[in-house]
Amino acid sequence: QVTLVESGGGLVQAGGSLRLSCAASGRSFSAYSMGWFRQAPGKEREFVAALSWSSDTTSYTNSVKGRFTISRDNAKNTVYLQMNSLKPEDTAVYYCAATAFRATTDPSGYAYWGPGTQVTVSS
Image (cartoon, rainbow, N blue to C red; front, side, top):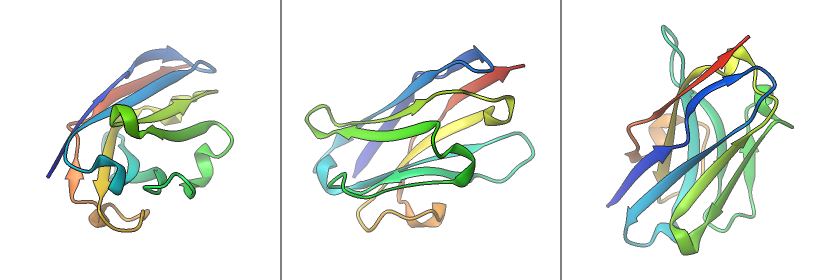
């Protein structure tokens, strides 16, 4: 069982940066692969980034490549999403998720989810 809580969201101007954090509690955080997803109003939840349990494999959706970076600190039971060069279309609720299996872009592959944090990018 893993409990996830996101933080770091807020309002930022286009071109700005935010760093989201996802704190995990529970057992064996280091054994879980982690993902970030987002959901904008009226849209389906979409994959943003994922990171394997060992941090040797990352993946990103095309629209954030080169701007977002996913990382983790297993000693702190925390996964991060550094977001640079933010655009208005990045506005959404951002969720972190955990899976005991291989990281995937499919949200149904994740068993544990945080409540989300709002990111709003103004133009």
